[in-house]
Image (cartoon, rainbow, N blue to C red; front, top):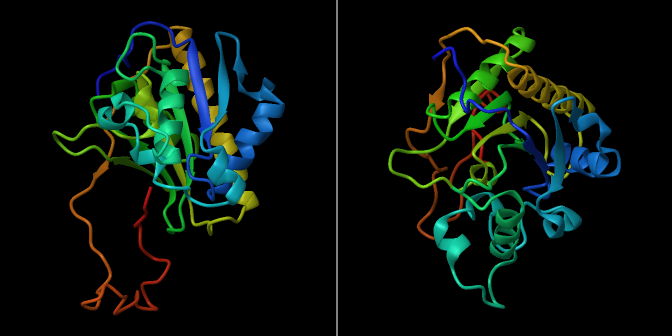
Length: 256
């Protein structure tokens, strides 16, 4: 990876988003806290804006109400004519696009950090669109260096030729933080503290970048999606198998 993270200009407009999925409680609780007390998100060169992405799903403690908000930021959804029968999350995606974007425009936020949990035993996962986002790759490397004793994997979710669709794709650059294992609707203190520390480290990195800090070139291991493997199922779609007890909690699979 090259030694000059892009963009070349300082980042001034930054958002920290929690509650994209309403039952992933680390980001939900942190977003609610920062909305009451945003001082923790301030740095000398910028102040990050806290956002609770999916209020209705958060109130119901559900992943979503009608459809997955973290798949709703495509041009087909964002540019379609609004209709009263639109899914709640599609309407909310358009609202967030106006707040943080518009997507692919010069007026979009410089950076969005999106907070997630997973039930998978995967520790910390940093989720970026692709390696072409050089700034996000430098940030990933910086976060890995903060706690080298802990697993901190990088996942590149965008397939070749695929349009980006996540919340942080609305901004000029972005990153998802995904921590687990944590059951849906449950808050683990250790993961809450870990996520809070990672957000602080990410904001500190942006501050260093804005100050003109030089970051050395590096190599980094990253993962890409190869395929999806479902559970065995019957002809009617019911589950026909489970994870073997010796493999349970040992895998690194997750659903964002």
